[in-house]
Length: 192
Image (cartoon, rainbow, N blue to C red):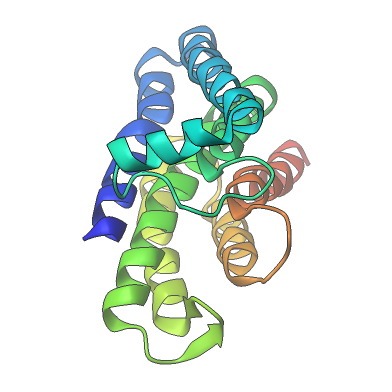
């Protein structure tokens, strides 16, 4: 149940920026939303390090939303950094697709991996979860290929890159790597 709460929170919280960007097609509103949330998340991070009891209080009053063992920055802060950078530096269709991949692919891979995962790739990462993320993001990519001037091949390169980064056991938070590296790759391919 905790996974569902965290992923639902992420879909609502994380889906806000790409959906606003999709509706307005102007980076100002999503950049302002991202900077607002990023400000509060960084303030929370600062307070967490200054007063460790704050983090325990927050975990107690928001069960299932935050992971209990964050890295240097929480996943939400890394997610918002990736969202902010994506809106500011990636072309409109790449930015929106990248943020939707990050939001929905992550949720799908986690839920499917926990529910149906049997073939473990790395600790906490399964083939079934990775395939779930690839399928959900491919559906998003097909939608974008039909409605925006981005080829499906570029979007699929981003899907595969993000899903591989999601399962790799690297020390950098996957919300940051999956939120930025596929976007950088898709932007380079889009410009060429």
